[in-house]
Length: 84
Image 1: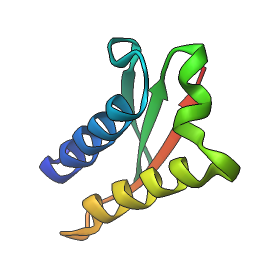
Image 2 (image 1 turned 120 degrees about the vertical axis):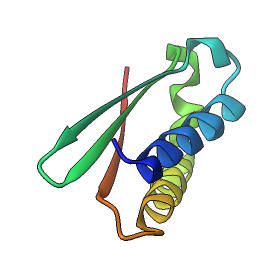
Image 3 (image 1 turned 180 degrees about the vertical axis):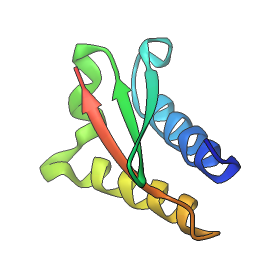
């Protein structure tokens, strides 16, 4: 994992932990696929809707910020998924 990818993962972790009621339940896993970095977010069942937001607006914003953080130096693609 490159330094920029670690920055994207750290950014996602900070954003998600600030949104949920139980920040200690937040777990971030990463895996590399072909040319993309997959960031999987796991949160408490009660907090899933807070991360997704109305009509998916919050998770879309998190994805956009993660992609922007990784694109600064033209690094690999980043995909952000919520797993429950």
